[in-house]
Length: 443
Image (tube, rainbow, N blue to C red; front, side):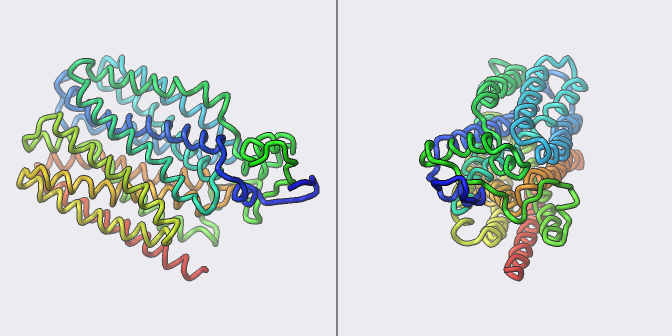
């Protein structure tokens, strides 16, 4: 690495360096961004009872509120993923964080449900652009051997943020109201904007693929180099990377089958996660638990997701990603049935065990699936691949959040609603089993 005539692939350069302060900063900032997303997701579920009481609504009337935010997330992911592959991850991240922060803050001043639904849609658009770019940026700055571990560790921000969103909402709504919760969710992203603007780097792999001037590439490379004063080699893109990108690349010969299987798994997984996040407090309250107990029980789901994500990320790097994921989704299906039994008997211990297990098996697996998608696609279409997989997942989350209201309107019992979710968990397991078989055949 001492002459400018040397060439080296970007990923090989990253793999040759110890994890630098800049890489840790990237992971930390992406962690915060997805944590705010998690906070926002959980908080909306917990402000629902307060909205019902203040605006004299029925439970099914709230379905559009959940659906609007998630539909916005889907649109944001579809639009901003390809844009990030064209103009860069950093500008899309900054713009997305501003949009969802400002919209969430304004949501607190909504005079009626219709206004709140519109602002939740705009909030979702911003969140839909931010999360996939956080996954992409983390993946592109991680060494290959630790990619799954570090991406899942970063994405634990979502489950930790969700847990805090539930706990904070459950404790503070009586004193600051639902408006105060939305203000918190809006101020937090706006506070980190200056850090993103000044210290968040451009993606090194994106810069090389797009033929940025060498001195600009070197500036970023030196920030992650073990020796900042060393001469940086001529960094080159991997053979699979291209300067131009199209969504059609996701359906090219090399990626089409994996894309379809992954999309089905994302849809099923997010359907479960968002039905649980959106409706579990209401379901638990309907069988006799107060809001504070419902908050703690639901938060155990997020805690399980955090621990599961870290554990699964490590196992994915060691044992094979697809195999670990399909086994984990099977475990999630089992624990969904256990939670149904806990609801029937109002058994708190069984509920806590079951919710923790669902967190590990489903929420943890979804974090792992995000890491898997970021490794599956090459640089030139990575943000598009991750974003569109998330968009399809978000369509599942829209269905999940809406279905919760429909099932309750059909007067199905809480245990039946939860037990039915074992079916999509098993479908997700089958998808990753098939992906594993496909990869084994190609290797």
